[in-house]
Length: 574
Image (cartoon, rainbow, N blue to C red; front, side, top):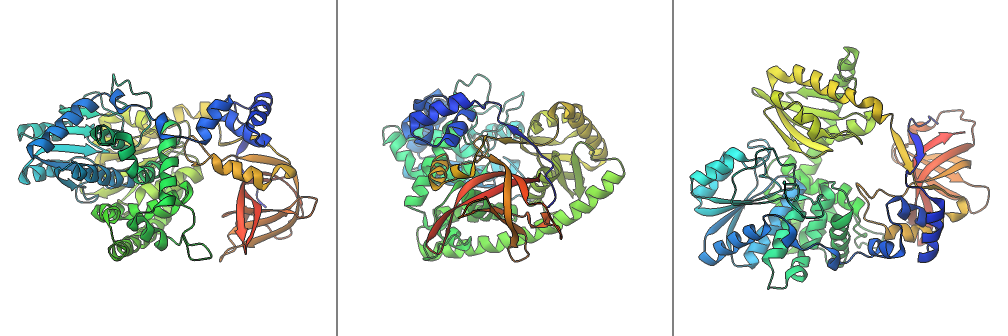
């Protein structure tokens, strides 16, 4: 086996005394006490709120700056019969935001249309073409979802055409805000809203909640929580605070009553159990099975199919749309593999030339714009470097970036603003456009900025919640871990360590022997462990039979039998 390169460290909040006290108060296994304390939860009351989130814990939408003015303008448009255009985005967050607001406004009796820009032909965000389209359609109000906070010239154009604008967004606002009728964004200066990490669909949900006041309010808006969870999980925002409530309750709704479109998508994704029914929809299955297929609509062309899938009310229509999305997803996978292979070659060549020391910035004319973000994510995870991949199109290169812990992409791109045609996004994910003649200068400056702070970050590390014994890895522990879901950014799956584990049997599974399988422990029945994509760690003639393991205990159901299976994060020989 080949050793890991990560440094395993106990979580900085680790406290054995607090963990024992909290576990006892909850009647939970000790490892759960460690996990909760490590996530900043110190009391039984806090733990109960975390384990059993409720709608009542959501903040009042009226606390969000601009939401009252936005709601008043939208309701006035409905009352006067003015046509409203919703301008969205082509990713899952934008698709779900568009569906949510469009559906809610239809419920309220609005004359409403929507437009999602074509990724290749139009690019991200509100564009002149969207404004002019709304004008041709006779719209008097334009509402953005998951975009718009940087659209200064576009909203100026709307104003000149007599179109009012309401911006709902969650991206970092620029120094100069657009002259919109109202801006709803918890990150804008002066906004007192206590939770700042909502996805675009979360911001749209707060507006919908406000619009439904007097018509059931939050309880009425809650009928859309499944879609809110889908967009929130897909956008990789921190699954803490309100996002955890929205995602958890939305997943519960999804598992009670799955929309026809999502059911058709789940079947296409292979989410069937041994009896032909659907497997439970978890945050992991949303992120890796449902979201990529919905995202394929916008990545490979027109995202309107994604909205149509969510709107579908009959099985036949839903299955037809899901089939088209599956075809696009297959194309997306193929193009991703092609782009990844070429990016690997470019990276190796540039590294030999002394480039890409602290970061990875690459560009090529043959990359499909819809897959560069996926490939950038893979490179950032594997190389532990912030990665920007751009597609050359005419005089400019446009692309996506993904970051690593400790590196805020938006702040670094702000420091390169004079070299960019435009940029925007989050700390971990951003989009940008650069003139071809400035690519080399941009790469040099960006790499220097990343390198400036590299020493303080240190090498890659894996936070560990606690050390556990084999006897603590029980189904009861797994059941408690499942109550901590949904997992994602800010609420990672618990990771425990077992030092000096005795390895009795080593093998591989999978079509290409890509997964590692171990049998562990001194007593029967021995614990089983699975290391996904770790099959390459086996060497012929391996003699060591002791290992340190970093893992998450999970549930493994096979032939009517349920057992604990350790999902390996990393492995070290001793």
